[in-house]
Amino acid sequence: MRYQLMLPRFQLRTTFLVGAAIVASSLMFACARQESTRARLAATEALNCAPSEVNTVLLRETSKVREWGVACDFTYTRIHCTDAGCRRAEPKPPCMGNLTCFEENPETLAWELPSPARDSSHR
Image (cartoon, rainbow, N blue to C red; front, top):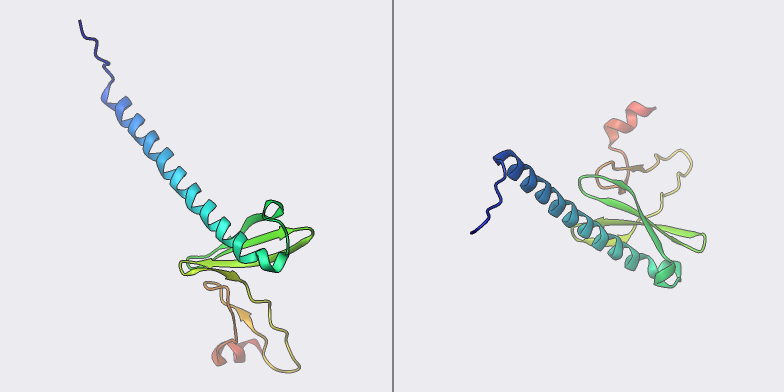
């Protein structure tokens, strides 16, 4: 005599959706973990720490760039990761005299001089 497991359709559908959600979250975690490792590697020469002592945290994210904070021994650096790879973030350029100051592009997180139209509206 063979026994068959009889489940209602909605329970099978729910089981499938839960399984798909677990697979999707595992893939996202794996991708984030891989990128945090790349950010850690990009920061190792600046921090001079053993890899086991380095901590990473995602600070902010745009559609083009993810900014990671990488730290050890009370020292930290910011790392920008894109599809092309990870590199250290540039520090904010200083403002000098009466010249216009650089502004951070909200999409690329790069420092840029404001356009002349925006610059005249700030004065």
